Length: 566
Image (cartoon, rainbow, N blue to C red; front, side, top):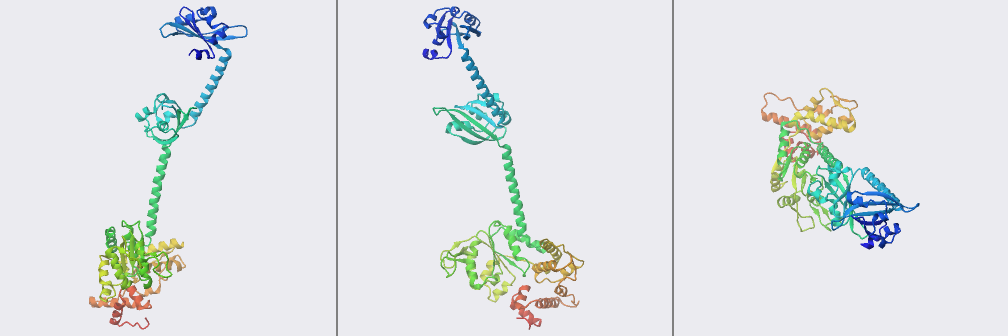
């Protein structure tokens, strides 16, 4: 200890309560031009005439004075009363060279300047800055503390971080994490007031690698968090609207429901949408069987899964089997070398719509029946069945019962498909929908072709009197043709196609006709009008929704001339 005291840059003298010097370090002896041994036991006043050591002992007050050694050198003397370990009162006198004082003053100013700069930086940074020691006790904190934390600076400084966590001022401590892991960390912190902070903690190590301080910079992200959540909500809302728009776009071909019979039809579709039972859609060509099939799919729990349409009348018989069931690698020469996935497997978890099921060849009907019963598909060239989960919807404009009787359709498949039959009435059975549908299609094609067409007086009455053997599809095509071809904005009765004006429901029924005769008369006129616009019996049978053999019998029954038809 004596060695340390002797190396101090200032003079140190200890005086007893009698005013005798009991200790002097080497620096004090040199400053007073005395021998250290000679100083001991001398009175302090004999060495320093203007000493206030005795007053300092008696009053316990500090004293500062000037000691002049000679004309060029001056010393500064600081004296203070103290108690030694035995309880005896003594005085300590410290001598400073003016050069040392000036140096200390300069260093003090530098330290004050650095402190001011640090305070300025901490106040201007706009974020919460805390400095803790190596044990987690808070040493400094800037003014943002009260704004962000809701706690004043004085209540923060000196507190350990664990105390702040225990008091739930913060939910967890970045300082503690830095101390435990010895590295920089970044965490999300929630304050007592509910604010969210992004906190980055940085360790400070001394020359020996010991962690001495932790600096934390906390950025308030509460508003950013709110904006992010708001953005996510807005994004979800946009996605919802987009989904609704996509649904509307998908359903743009859905006919308007303005009749009780169609309301009942769609009500039945909604009731059976979420069951997996096979649905058979029946109705004439053009009534909207595909639209109803899509509605069934889109209102079911499979709506986000595939909807696959297969037109059994459009695929050649030689290709239909491979299209439906697929084939394995190397099955056909010239085919895809890796094989091909069939449409049934492609519809897995979704809906397979078999349109014109009455046109499916008998040999494929057996394989389809097996899929319906076993829920498995075996691709061509393979012996390994594949499990499938498919909802089957079939549609036809033919009389399947009559086809079963004529051995043209398998009875077991018919009964397997006919679990939930839904008959879609023809446009003749819901004539009150014609004006709404006509207006609907007019608006659609006006928008599509940038037109401003409108129906003149009496046009919709003429449309309602027509039989519309092609149903909604024929009406839609007629309205599109009128929008595109009529030169004026007004569509008048002069623009209506001649066949619509000519082919009206017969109104020449005699009052004395029986119901059977009236039906026969109407049926004969309907067949004659249809045959005038058809090239073949098969085409007419499709429009009328009957089997060609049935139409042939009725043509013979009513003695209708068909020499020009094939």
